[in-house]
Amino acid sequence: MKKLLKDNGYLIVKNVLNFKKDLKPVLNDMEFVMDCLIQKFAQKKNRNKVLNYDFKKKYTYVSKLNIYDLDQYFNTRLPRDHVKKDSDYFASQSLWNLINNKKILDVVEKILGTEILSNPVQNTRIKQPEKSLPKGSVQDGLSGITPWHQDAAVLTTHGQKFSDLITVWVPFTKTTKKNGCMITIKEINKIGLLNHISGYRGQVEIKDSKLLNKFKPIHLEANVGDIILLNKLAVHCSLPNRSNDFRISADLRYNRAGTPSGRNPLPNFYVRSKNKKNITVHNYKQWVALWEKAKNKCIPRKYAFKYPLPTFKHNKKDLINLI
Ligand SMILES: O=C(O)CCC(=O)C(=O)O
Ligand SMILES: [Fe+2]
Image 1 (cartoon, rainbow, N blue to C red):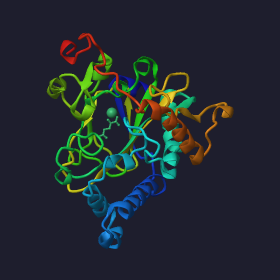
Image 2: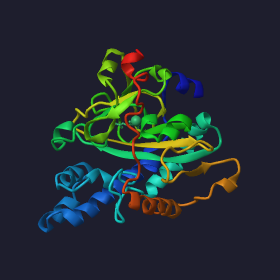
Image 3: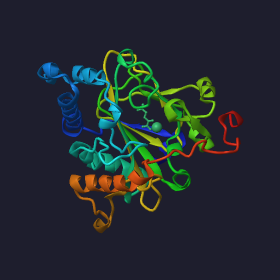
């Protein structure tokens, strides 16, 4: 498993999670957040009607309410910039359970070994059908397409070099070519970290990424219950959601103890260790407290994390010079 991931850059592990037990609770919590937003932002006369909508209809309604930075309410981490005392984020009990899910950690242990930290580079993504997205957000990584990148590029320079990190991508809906699965290119991770630039809306994007179109893509399709592992140098992006349904996912990350998170001062704590004493965060409330503590550190500097872009000032690591 470890070798496959190292060689190819990705690995799909089938039937790891149980929808009802492991995944549905996160969807329930997302729906709870929607209900709160409806209470707060919907016109009074519509509230009761909308609260009775199903998940999909409710989210479609909420996304049309023009709520500032809507994705942030459903995202697991602090906002990148403008961190404020009341910045909200999706740190739910169900997500804490997922991060600590034994079946996920058993897989991660096969790659990183027994000493594992939860890494704060995490997202939850609700990807609506492209046709119902508000104009201008089609390219937004959380709700639209994600541009070509390597996950190492979103870490600090220290993290890029030294973090032994993997991504665990968890689908809550069957994920296909049609509804916007990720795509990758086999073995291209072997050329190391590429130069990235700041794309539309400040996301991280491989420089001259159009050149990647000439390679044969691997579609990372997955069923509910499967998980997809990516190593930090896997070159990947995601397609638009051309279906009529939602594509919902979480991307969790873990790093090997002793290597940096690449996102100080955000929470980076043991979730598994041979020496139980290393595990100091035992419950959901302690976890939220860690995020709040990190938030207070971020408020004076106004950002939670920054991308070191361009990744390299020289052009030796430009894709065009390597393929
Ligand atoms: O879900 C997506 O569209 C992209 C996810 C991604 O880039 C990641 O998990 O590293
Ligand atoms: Fe990624």
